Every structure is written in C-alpha cells, then in structure tokens.
Image (cartoon, rainbow, N blue to C red; front, side, top):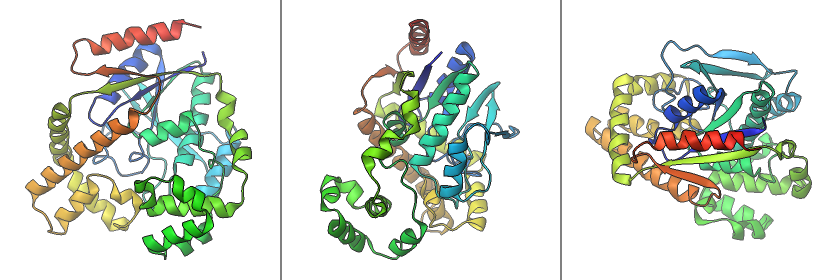
Length: 341
C-alpha cells in the first residue's frame, strides 16, 4: 500500500481527534507536522494532547536511515539519531519531541525525518497519516525545496547574527538581487529567511542538482489524500479561547517558568504563541486577563494566516467541522481512496 493521508487545517479544528479515529479505523500511525511541537518539554502551551503518564518510546533507526543520521549529526550536532513515538489510544504518534528548545530545527530536517518515517510505516504495512497545521512544512514535504540538502554554515550564521535587519537586507541585495526581488514583504523582513538566503547563495551549490538528489524522489509513487478541516472564524475564536483557558489550568505558566530557568527567552523556540504572552505576564507587563485576551487574539490571527496559506494548496478536500456527520463523510472518502488502485 503506497498511500498516505494528510490531515490539515487551522488551529483548533480537531485535527488530532479526527486523525486518531482514522488511524484506528484504517490501521494507521500519525506523524506530526507542527513546527511548535518538535521541542522537548514544550507540551502544554503547544497543545501536544498527550497524557501526563504517556511514555516516549525510542526507536533506534540508525541502520535503517543512514542519510538521516548523517543529516542529524551535521545539522543538529547530535551523536545519535533518537526518534520515538507516543502512544495515544493505542495509536503511535511520531514527530514530537525531536530536539531540545535550544537546538535549531529547520523545515529541511522535518522533510528528511518525515520521509524516512513514511517509508518505515509503509514497510510495516501501516497507513501514514501526516497531521498538522504548519502549512510550510506540508508544502515542503510534498514539494521539497531546492535548498533541502544545502548544509547549515555555523560560522557564517554566527557572523550574520551580529548584523541588523537592514544590514542583512543590504548583504543579500549585494550578493543576489534576483533572490531579493523574488522575496515577499514578510520574508524580506524576516532575519532567519534572509540569513538562509545568504547561506544558500554562498554555498555555491547547484540547486537543480540538489533537487534531483532529493530522497523524496524515491517516493514519487506514493498517492496522497489531503483532507482539510475548517470552520467559521467566530467559532474558532471561541474554541481557541476555551483551549487557552484549559492550557492555563493545565499548568502553561509553570511550564513556561520551568523552560525559562533552563533556556534563554530569545531562542526561536520560545517565540511560539503562548510563550510570548506568558513571558509578558511573568514580567508584569500585562495582567492575567490581558494574557488570556492576547493569547486568544494571536492564536485567532494565526488561524486566519493558516487558512490564507492553505488556500494556495491544490487537491485539498475541505470539510466544515460544523456540518453534521462531517467525520463520517471523511471516513467514506478515505475508504474509497484506499480501495482504488
């Protein structure tokens, strides 16, 4: 069976709940595609939805995925490839807790790890179900960027980290004006995107050759069914507020305090929604009610951006979660997809 499902949609649409149902119905395993959930110890605020007593079970994939080991060592500076899963309702969920909050994690790492997990799940005659709302991750998985195999230059990054936004913009314009002109407003004002663009150019790599060598090409015969979940913005906003209140009750503030004792607040991982607002609360810049309001507002704005990005995707079959029996309709669609050769 060379088929896989992708469950996507904005935050708070019930993707995990649906994916678990489908996994139990069709003997599947889940792979997370959430950029906020790759970090260890960042559980409540990011909404990993795993039980407190759930144990992370490590699976040694060294012999199976040598390309990943090489990649992991080069990019993340780990001596060993350690990937595991949580078991929720007897369903395995992969792709969580991949790195520590102070380790860099890029979309290229997600693509390579996920490709290998897909192969492993298929080889065990299971159904891979990719689940998540990080649209850039999903887009890169389906259409890997040409820069996928270009390694990170740590020394160059240390040098570029000292530059201001304007200096980074000027450096890229001097080096590669064509790339600069291709970038949208958001990317031009994103230091990490500018640094990566400079890094790619200075690598001198042939991008066409890189994409040809991508291991994703080995999976060209895998058929995808992409299911999108959506709802009216007003409903999502109410649901998001309920989740914010629930996460605060579960200990989101204590989790943030614990992380700040070990890691710097300036880390990219600590810029995730929820942590930023809680840090403001801890610094006495906002009151608790403002924390709730700002966190809810920013998550709602994020949901809007997710939908805007996802509308550009082709071949997504959308379902409104407010429609009666939408999940039954999805189950029938999946049955049909899996039966067709």
